[in-house]
Amino acid sequence: MSALANLKLVAAKRPMQLSPIVHRRNKVISRLHEQIQLAQALHEGKTYTPSKLKVVKNDETGETSTINVSKRIKEWWFVTDTGKFVVTLKYGAKVVEISKGKTAVELANASDLVPTLEILKTAIKNGELDEQLAAVSGSVKAGFKK
View 1 (cartoon, helix red, strand yellow):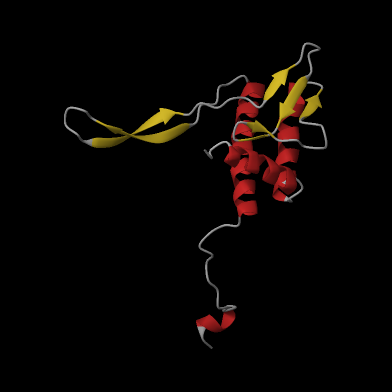
View 2 (view 1 turned 90 degrees about the vertical axis):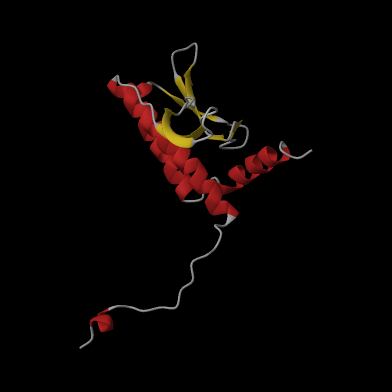
């Protein structure tokens, strides 16, 4: 018996581009992952500073090199004057309207921050906020047009 007989063979072609819906989901999910890491570090009393690669050019020699620099991440949450935490969901610099007229989630304390961000991440994966992301994406795109 052939070794390939145990495998399910299919004719498949990798798509060249992701659909805009999947692209928006992946973009927000990656940012939510960073927010979760930031919230976990806050809860543990640590700091979270991710790094990114940056290409720099030496003016004297004209040589380019790649260096690691720390990435700046802004928190998507803040504390109100009543002491409650409020979490917003962002697409780029725009705040996403989660429900009709509602742009944030109110939390009792900081320990609810990570579970709430995980719930938002799951909602995005399931496509529950695709319409809202599409609307915000359109307004972000409109800002780049002349």
